[in-house]
Length: 67
Image (cartoon, rainbow, N blue to C red):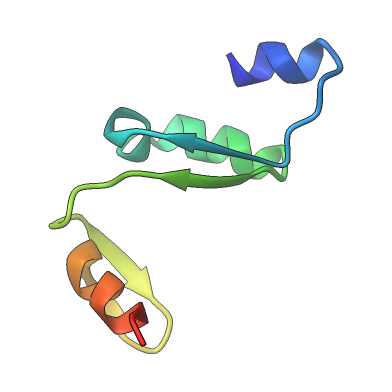
């Protein structure tokens, strides 16, 4: 759908998506290749890399980012 919007000449700065898209690598790769910002939902126990903290769960990463 996003590809069709971009092909039609419309512009987007960022997109959001639910957990289905958050766990699929292809949508993220497409967005990054088109230099679009994105926020995609992921489950709390998903392992992520955090600069300075290594690999941890998304839940812990969110807590580390909270002031």
